[in-house]
Length: 88
Image (cartoon, rainbow, N blue to C red; front, side, top):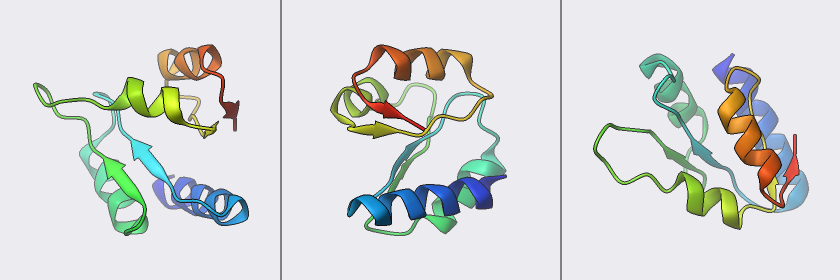
Protein backbone atom coordinates (compact mmCIF):
# COMPACT_ATOMS: atom_id res chain seq x y z
CA UNK A 1 0.00 0.00 0.00
CA UNK A 2 2.74 2.49 0.87
CA UNK A 3 4.52 1.85 -2.43
CA UNK A 4 1.34 2.47 -4.42
CA UNK A 5 0.50 5.58 -2.40
CA UNK A 6 4.00 7.00 -2.86
CA UNK A 7 3.93 6.26 -6.59
CA UNK A 8 0.55 7.98 -6.98
CA UNK A 9 1.73 11.00 -4.99
CA UNK A 10 4.93 11.25 -7.05
CA UNK A 11 2.98 11.13 -10.33
CA UNK A 12 0.57 13.81 -9.09
CA UNK A 13 3.42 16.03 -7.91
CA UNK A 14 5.32 15.61 -11.19
CA UNK A 15 2.21 16.50 -13.19
CA UNK A 16 1.75 19.64 -11.08
CA UNK A 17 5.43 20.56 -11.15
CA UNK A 18 5.74 20.44 -7.38
CA UNK A 19 6.84 18.10 -4.58
CA UNK A 20 5.16 15.84 -2.04
CA UNK A 21 4.80 16.68 1.65
CA UNK A 22 3.50 13.58 3.42
CA UNK A 23 2.26 13.60 7.02
CA UNK A 24 1.60 10.44 9.00
CA UNK A 25 -0.88 10.08 11.86
CA UNK A 26 -0.67 8.44 15.29
CA UNK A 27 -2.19 5.30 13.77
CA UNK A 28 0.24 5.01 10.85
CA UNK A 29 2.26 1.82 11.31
CA UNK A 30 6.00 2.44 11.63
CA UNK A 31 6.67 0.18 8.64
CA UNK A 32 4.36 2.28 6.46
CA UNK A 33 6.00 5.53 7.58
CA UNK A 34 9.43 4.05 6.83
CA UNK A 35 8.29 2.83 3.41
CA UNK A 36 6.95 6.29 2.53
CA UNK A 37 10.18 7.93 3.65
CA UNK A 38 12.20 5.50 1.53
CA UNK A 39 10.05 6.10 -1.55
CA UNK A 40 9.78 9.89 -1.22
CA UNK A 41 13.39 11.15 -1.18
CA UNK A 42 14.32 14.85 -1.18
CA UNK A 43 13.03 17.25 -2.34
CA UNK A 44 9.91 15.46 -1.08
CA UNK A 45 9.22 15.59 2.66
CA UNK A 46 7.78 12.94 4.98
CA UNK A 47 6.82 14.16 8.44
CA UNK A 48 6.41 11.18 10.75
CA UNK A 49 4.05 11.86 13.66
CA UNK A 50 5.68 11.42 17.08
CA UNK A 51 4.02 11.84 20.47
CA UNK A 52 5.10 15.08 22.11
CA UNK A 53 6.79 16.43 18.98
CA UNK A 54 5.67 19.49 17.05
CA UNK A 55 3.08 18.60 14.45
CA UNK A 56 2.94 20.81 11.34
CA UNK A 57 -0.21 19.04 10.04
CA UNK A 58 -2.66 21.95 10.44
CA UNK A 59 -0.24 24.49 8.94
CA UNK A 60 0.62 22.21 6.03
CA UNK A 61 -3.04 21.51 5.35
CA UNK A 62 -3.87 25.22 5.41
CA UNK A 63 -1.12 25.96 2.87
CA UNK A 64 -1.67 22.98 0.55
CA UNK A 65 -3.22 23.61 -2.87
CA UNK A 66 -4.00 19.87 -3.24
CA UNK A 67 -4.40 17.10 -0.67
CA UNK A 68 -4.19 13.33 -1.08
CA UNK A 69 -5.99 11.56 1.77
CA UNK A 70 -6.25 7.83 2.37
CA UNK A 71 -9.64 6.34 3.20
CA UNK A 72 -8.46 4.84 6.49
CA UNK A 73 -8.59 8.18 8.34
CA UNK A 74 -12.03 9.75 8.50
CA UNK A 75 -10.75 12.62 10.64
CA UNK A 76 -7.99 13.47 8.12
CA UNK A 77 -10.54 13.30 5.31
CA UNK A 78 -12.84 15.67 7.22
CA UNK A 79 -9.91 18.04 7.82
CA UNK A 80 -9.11 18.02 4.11
CA UNK A 81 -12.75 18.73 3.24
CA UNK A 82 -12.71 21.76 5.55
CA UNK A 83 -9.64 23.13 3.80
CA UNK A 84 -9.77 24.97 0.51
CA UNK A 85 -7.52 22.42 -1.17
CA UNK A 86 -8.43 20.17 -4.05
CA UNK A 87 -8.78 16.60 -2.74
CA UNK A 88 -7.57 13.34 -4.30
